[in-house]
Image (cartoon, rainbow, N blue to C red):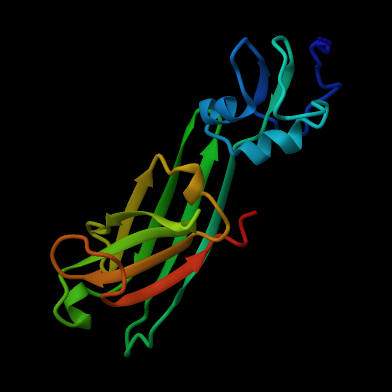
Length: 191
């Protein structure tokens, strides 16, 4: 059985996060998890590897650079005389926990009815099922009408352009979204 010799890039792209030498048992997917970088990012910056599904111990890989992307959430409902807005940032990269950071400008939840909290949801339909994570937003001290949350350790499934981010007004424990969805967006601008 022919086994190709280890390969190394002639150069890594600008801003790369470092180099990694493949050891026995490594797969490109396991390495992407190790560095908390999307699998596709490794494929793009390692064009010298002919088949990303076949790594040889000793192969040298370029680690994709740290990346972040932000998006503005759009009001889903008429805010009824309230100025509402929200932004979400995705952070991912070598040595950095993949996370979503959310900041929203909203009045107290009770301004919209019988609600006592805001919740941010990241939702994606994948392989005929829904994957989701949710986190209540906390009011930022000394900053009126500002609410924030951070969702850490986001799965690869949720780091997709078709993931929907929703902020809703809720009552009690965190139910599924839809109680009163105020802001929403997706990551299509973060490819």
